[in-house]
Amino acid sequence: MSPAIISRGAASATATAASRLRALGYDPDELLQHYRDHGYIILDGVLASDASSPLHLDSLRRLADTATQITRAGKWPHRRIVGNAFPPFTQNNRDSWGVQHIMNPQLDTAASASAGSMSSVFQQFYASSPLLDVASLLIGCQVEAMQMELFNLLINPASHRFALGWHRDDIRPDVSEQEEEQRLETPTYGVQFNTALWDDDCLFIVPGTHRRLRTAAEVVANNAKAPPAVQVDSEGEVDKTFGEDGAWNGVDPPNTMRVRLKPGQTAFYSQRILHRASYLPTAKRATLHGCYGDASSGTGAAERARNVLQHGVEWMRDAHFGASLPPVLKPMWDNLLRMDAAYADKKLGFSLDNH
Ligand SMILES: O=C(O)CCC(=O)C(=O)O
Image (cartoon, rainbow, N blue to C red):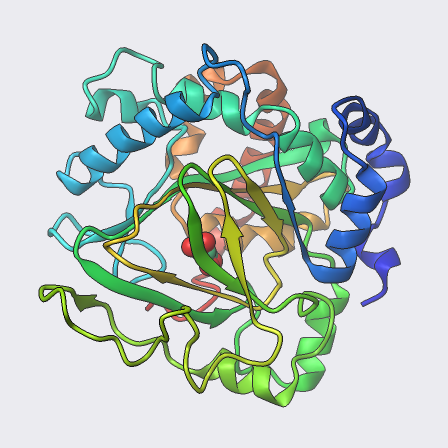
């Protein structure tokens, strides 16, 4: 795919975001170039440095711990469970690898926290700069023309090893070369991020695969089934599928890169990059994980709809939720509702197999 397609509208749309980022000490041209070439960037400075800010690492860690506890205790039903990538997630007590929908005010009720004390901090984070400005820069869309999408917390399962196999978020592994080429010609109209609150080396990517056809080895990796979730009950048990360095023996294609984030670091990555993830119950994880979309042209919705709606966002239609949002998110919420109204009854299904 040509860089011109990825950066559609970037010149004008990102001028404002770029100037705000420059003022914060970032080099937007360098960020954009690295993202276009490699499909990811890693940056510091997304969290507040002021220890009294709710967006400081310590505060976000406390909230993440509470969100994790209520999810593991069965008090928060919106979760990702080991063995599945998508909902519906039942109440039966399977282990969790994610806390979904953390901007939902109901989270405060579930946590018996005072109203707005958790969800509004997560909303503030999702609305904060430089996070939002970097997203605007990479998508090539003014902030007010972006759409609000998903915002979750990725956690380590309490007692299982679990892995997601190699995938692109919305291109099935079994596509023909011709279809793959066609899909790659369409912009993604969005971007995804991981902000680590603790050391996080769960994510693996193959840089550059967001913009080119897969090699033969990548096709094989993309089609390989991830091992089933395994309850870890004996400490000495050896996992033969993955090496000590996390390598998926015999499956990882050349140029596999393990994304290692320090607390407070953020990786932005294309949802089209070939990626996988491995989770261990012994390695604490609390990583803020979200995405934003481009609603500027009317053509992005078709590309984003399944990606977003498959995660069950009906709760976001609630007018109280809209009213609770920081002002910068309100136009983005309207844009999400527009896409939801156009696609919710289209039975789009899931992007990939749900396991
Ligand atoms: O756990 C991660 O960092 C990645 C999750 C992932 O691959 C996905 O949500 O598609």
